[in-house]
Image (cartoon, rainbow, N blue to C red; front, side, top):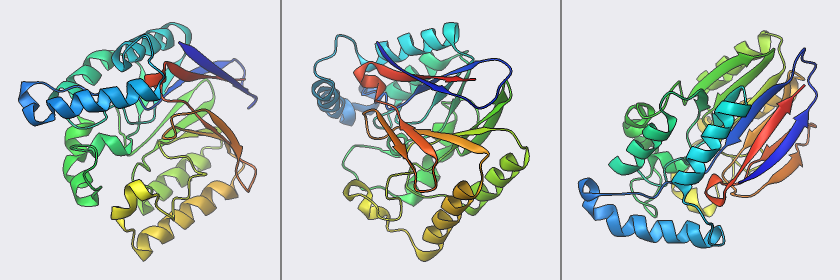
Length: 264
């Protein structure tokens, strides 16, 4: 297991350690989803090759990372793509690994994918949202938790967009006056208003694009937000947004890697 360690000074009385896990991509199916069994094998091979033939499976890395976090960290934050596609077996595996664990979760685009290659759909995401949420603790749309004086905020941007409600919720968190660390699936530095080719079918309308601009303006307008963490890219990156915010992208856990954040 490779652990990327990042230390951020935010003025806390004691150190707070957060395990950031993302992009596990469980690829499992059984007879309940017989049409997905071959697809599961194909997708598992894709990630096996992308990870350069790792010695352990995504499930094994997920269990190991969560066990480490429970022992060494104050909290785990998981930013989506736990599932590679929706299947009974994938959901059961995630539920088994996460049962009784202390974590925050926000979704990735694959949480709403019935089969990789099927065009994305806001309508399908809305239909599946409650069902997928039932496999995970908390509120994957928006959630905050104060740990040791730092406010950890998760925001669902799995389909490259933000909502007016999320903007209002983040405004309330900023008003608390605590340092905030943001967590989402898609990096802020991703061109959210220019959907990448894999998600071009979403076709955001003018209202949606305006909400995205408002969210960016809100994030850029405050010094309460001290860092942003995301996944989606499957590799590590450390970037600086135009307004100075530092953003860190955590590697895919299917590669046997995650980030440990020390806040001091």
